[in-house]
Image (cartoon, rainbow, N blue to C red; front, top):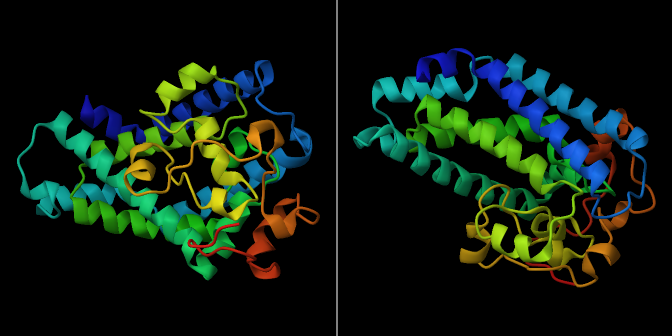
Length: 277
């Protein structure tokens, strides 16, 4: 079964991505949390276009990607988990948790370092918050993230099947927690103990610096609570909060080319992780 999954991992990942995207689009259409500032027809071509550019760039630069690196690490016995004989289910769970911690720390770093923030700013510059925001990253950031991920996979010694499950889970939860969807308050309160919910992550997309420097988790919500970056709600409430980057509120590019050149044409503004409003 594992061999079959890995041999079809490209198609499976694409299928999961398309399926979750479709579910979230329908959910947003039926139960939107907030009215959109700009229409989907204005935002989505660039948001989805930059996903395609980033995906193609990674395919060219990293044709073997993380699965092949994990295979090599396993064959050579490299990494923390590679040195321990664990049952496959337990190894997968531990690898996913450790990879998720690495993504959390990487996210914090992209907010704290000015050059990295200029790249990550493309993600935050979206003035609306919906399922396509979850995949809207500058291609250079995608490449840097892939390099970091390959290093983490080697250090952890994650198995290929663990890397596959992590990719699927991260893509699905990133689309879910960026969804413009309404979840009952009581359900959200319990759900965010297990996974980052849209109301939890939306706080991170606030123009308020103290709020955008909180809730860095993409998948598991525990790191924010354990490391002191958790914020329950935005000060202005979810209906009243402004989303985006403060200095781009009146001049945010909407087209694909504008997003691609944004890191090289705009001031980073306030970015430092220790700044508060």
